[in-house]
Image 1 (cartoon, helix red, strand yellow):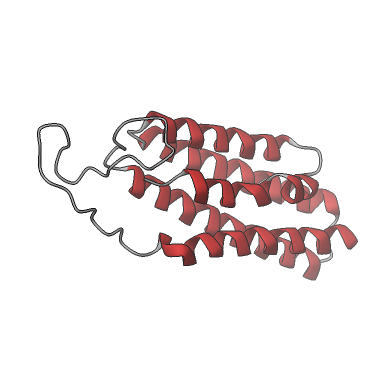
Image 2: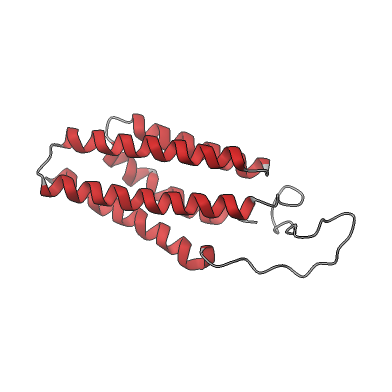
Length: 164
């Protein structure tokens, strides 16, 4: 049962990271930046963030990034629930691994769908890479280890990079 406890702890860490990004304002509407309408910047477009390599961010970046935040938070909750259920039912590590692989596979598909909606090519690439990471977790021989080594880094990375 040690494997199941480790899974629960790793999942809680990822869940906490997801909650942290939500508490940092992901659930609040973004304040409109003070702008003057001009031919160069359409009304409602966000200015380029400092340190970014591109021009003006696409209009749906905030919407897509928030949707991915919600997906990761829901995925973390599902993984925690699966781990707890596996512990209660005294499932084998193979049974838990199969559940985790299916959840990670579904999560990868959902993130890939959001990537396809992104109008900003940098955000699309970031989310496509995230989906590939989740695919790797779904294919790993030990999703529990993958959760502890890779998954826990995904929410903080997206909090830093998937914003306008």
